[in-house]
Image (cartoon, rainbow, N blue to C red; front, side):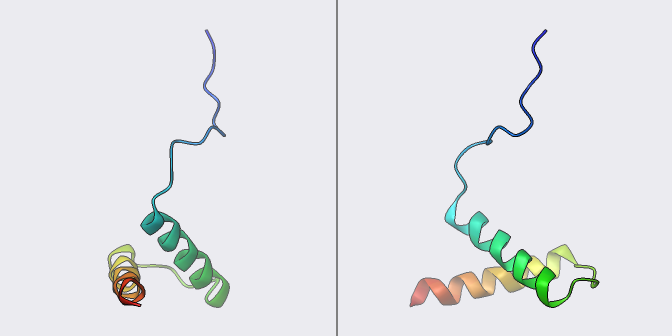
Length: 55
């Protein structure tokens, strides 16, 4: 039986998913020890996304 490659990409990353990933990395750099409330973090990211879409 063949094993699945765990490093294989799962598909294309959407622009929004890439944006959220970038926001998360920025947050980790600024606040490395602070835990993240996912719901609150997601809301803030979506607000930033909406602002960037208008420009």
